[in-house]
Length: 277
Length: 351
Image (cartoon, rainbow over all chains, first blue to last red; front, side, top):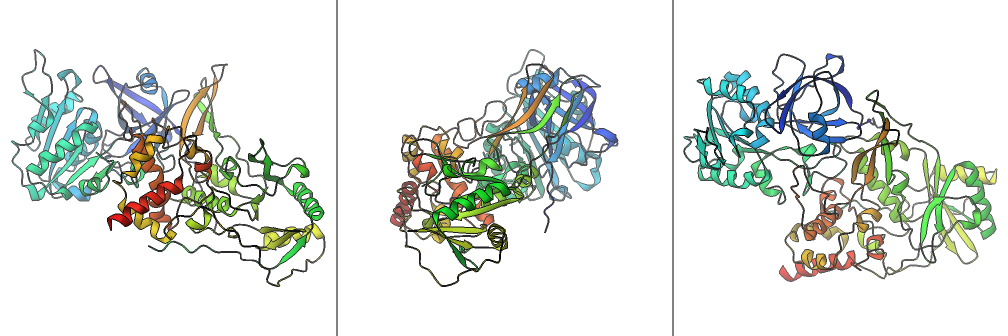
């Protein structure tokens, strides 16, 4: 039998349609694949973004596929040579895109349930694809609770979306910053301080957690204290990835390739994977 | 857990070659295709390379420094050529030239078989698989030295799966066993007449392995179920220098890094992949500097678990083939056999 092989590493040269500066270090890029084709992604999936001469990196998709247009959004933080270069790009530039990769969130795990989104820092970007999805299909879900924490007020992402979430009656939005500035009037403290006051129907609440590595253990403990069953917790994990297709080995956590089995894992699986969090 | 049963010497019969006929046969093969064979590198080191001269081809050698993987997964490979002015790329032509790999040991073939599995699984990768097309393998028996342990991982010296011919040296020459139709075709073309194969049973001198794993290989996956938190990992890492030689020389390691290089004209460049190794400190470092396996003992454990558990769980075969390279070339004299036997000892003491 002839095996169907693929050229796995060829990017599509996609257009940057719009760029929005979100913070000092984060920008949102709206991207269109060639030929006006849609990416056909699931919330929580990622793409490999590249600029020739600077390399390639995995970036979460922050828009929901329920968006009407064929474009998708990436929120990119300046952290190195490649992302510094991407930040210099303007509308009309081209970037290489491969993907979508990874499992993404399974809508069926969340349908009919109260959804608790817990986002730390730039973790709001991957979660936003799922938040938008649940809001666009509002009737499929019960409560939508968003808990968001950043280090400083100046690092808050998506202020216009946050304003809309705060204005909606059918979305509960809570946020905190680790360190306030003179203008900040909201909560101060780490994100886990927002969890104890929540009133949750624990059996019917499903949590989706994305944040920096240090956040996962403490969030899991806080959710456990709320008696949320392990199986109701989903986490999206970040790892180094070079290929996105289960070959290069960099993203491997024990026997699991994050680019293939993840990045979204049920907490029961996370507990089996000793190196996960 | 029962691992897949290794086949041993399967053949349709054999012919006898004296040393001169063997040389003529090698010359014949060199005219058929590119012939890759073992060659002397230093006093007692060997490499696989394309044969240019029959007299330089080595049949009796313990192991080469680099395994065969370098021909299918080159240490450095161009994935794309790009042009910065046009912001576009093209894909280099992938070679599918016919190659005959001559005089390779059974563990080398098993390693290729494991690489095939990993490059076919999930997303079949054309870069590797295209290079694998049109490869013929002619095996040869070997005399185990103090580092080989093929039998302990289920690989007899005369395991011929994947070979077309198999050579067993004897006093006055060589038995040339025909393993499959490709082998028979080569022999027929060589002698330009019908080959009369002998089928009388012959018994090659039995060869003993000096190094042995204490448990049968079928029990190794169970051992690895119990040793995740073993103290052995830390003990090993006290000696380990984290150089990654064991990764690079392992015939079944295939992890890679990808980097872009711009040429001096600042217009053209290429995206290349390089061999990488999970023993190297930066292997699991993510953006932002978080390193998910920053401890040497965790990396050692990861390497061994990939050989004996993680891939075995779905392939049904061990990913260690007993070639002994990681041990014989380790600058810190760490022995993989000792690691496994220490793990076994710990498990048997605790059960």
